[in-house]
Length: 291
Ligand SMILES: Nc1ncnc2c1ncn2[C@@H]1O[C@H](COP(=O)(O)OP(=O)(O)OP(=O)(O)O)[C@@H](O)[C@H]1O
Ligand SMILES: [Mg+2]
Image 1 (cartoon, rainbow, N blue to C red):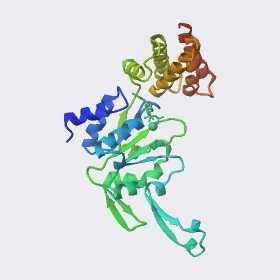
Image 2 (image 1 turned 90 degrees about the vertical axis):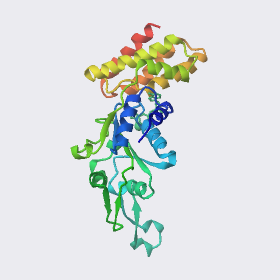
Image 3 (image 1 turned 30 degrees about the horizontal axis):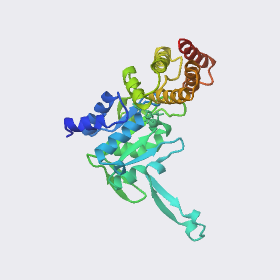
Image 4 (image 1 turned 135 degrees about the vertical axis):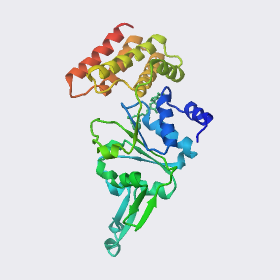
């Protein structure tokens, strides 16, 4: 069992600030042996939290395997299967097959934990072996005529953006195999602290304007989804760094803020929807005009 000191050590050493609730919740479920799926709007630290937990729990970055799911992924990539030797250019070998192990198989065989990043970018069909492993605790490898078992302390984490462009809807049964943990937008106070550490010389008025921009875009997202997402903490950091550099180079504060907000606006608006582009521009200009 993790001690209170372990929990504190993991929280304090995490690069992602202000997400302690989500991290604590995840640690408890991990202790109970459940797979975790971090979900939430992009750029708020899901992947970084997953990597950090695995490095801390397993004793370093080599203690886990990380794969990034993608649209073309199949059972072959996750579990493994036969692979032709044809690529070798040798006609004799061309008719023979070897087998290749997929990510889950490699992780289990090497005793490493597993992080599946961007889980919902691959279709549920890629995960049928994994589904069986999570349901029964064992994974039959037909191509090797063996059965792998998962140990009780094997950790599997995933990250996902539900409903984002280019993502698949998970089958209800697969979804149920993971404990969902939401990683949302960090609070204004947290982000202020993060920015003051990264860009200590950024003038207060511009820092507050950036935080205001983040808040208003998030409100628009929450209220009626008039924006597909709010500004992420990652976006807040990028804006602050850009403004910090530009102001040091002598640019006008108002001009710099408006510029940076419009750049970020392109990321968070839906570029095919005039209304959302206009809305984010209006928010940027109205906050910029107060500077
Ligand atoms: N709460 C936070 N405190 C400090 N830094 C943060 C925070 N949230 C995000 N960041 C910064 O944003 C970066 C991007 O985070 P990360 O890639 O883990 O997000 P994500 O949720 O996985 O995004 P995506 O959904 O796009 O994959 C981090 O490396 C970190 O620098
Ligand atoms: Mg990520």
